[in-house]
Length: 422
Image: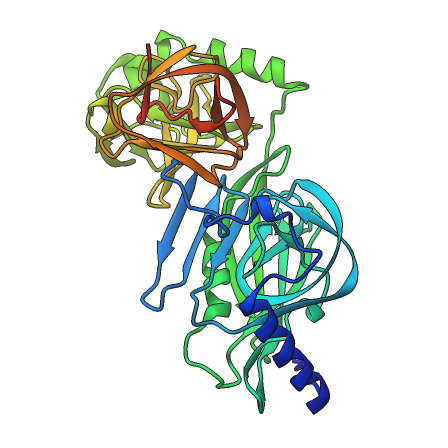
């Protein structure tokens, strides 16, 4: 593996730039009005996101299935630097928000890999915006005047059942600590996050993620998909298919009893897959999670008992499938990362997030909720306690979730386990 080492002059220059960045943002950075205490995006309690904090203070997770990220602790000293020039600014979801002239240096605070866009972004210590990772010059990592940090190549592939490529691959350099400079494996943290991601590709259903390494420890993450045998021509026809399939014929399959429908499914064990746009659902009544589309006792993974609204189990729908009898199932991923099949019957499951404007909502989450300036729920404005009634002027789609826009223009979660329509 190629290691990026630099001469003594560059070391001294980088050290000086780092000191300047840590003391104050350099001219040409993001507008001062955007540099708030929420410089690093806050992980929300939304069920579209997951996060884990390690013992060394690193936090990693996945947003909406497609964005794997790592937030590094303050003890990490990987320098990010650009030469003077014009650069694009992005938000946490990879949407371009501005183009400005910048010259800066700072410490790497967050790295985000957007699998849908096939792009990577980073945030450094002085910014409240993200920059696109263009090459290894973005990371001139330094621990001491005599020791430089190295990078290693990360490759991401998308393949079908026959290991044939079905989408554009990705390749970028990430921090590598295998040179013995420090003991915390920050590089493997982003790999762990990527292994928890569930990217979406049209006409395919996600199966699994796997990692391999070459002789120089350069990692490759491979996402495996199964081709859908039945696809819809448009989102409207897909929606119609879903609604027509969630009829009462499915209700007999919810408890893997010896009902007529259950027996029929057992006799017809294979499934026909249907294309899917990811969404989030929660269980309103007792349901089971199953290994296959056939809801039998032997296939059952576990029961989910009926819960109060604020504790209802939620699932990310990563695929649709039908039994040979035509009964529709959701292929889902649980909040713990387990995959399986649940009923698609709307009498038992419903959207986790409001899809239509509820006009007014009451905060029902015991810890309250926050309102933010940005749709990705960053730049906190204020906190609302449980019982607060809020007026809503619009609903905005955000990945597999939605956000409620209050009449004052701020954003709050639209999660039905946290807010209740009045």
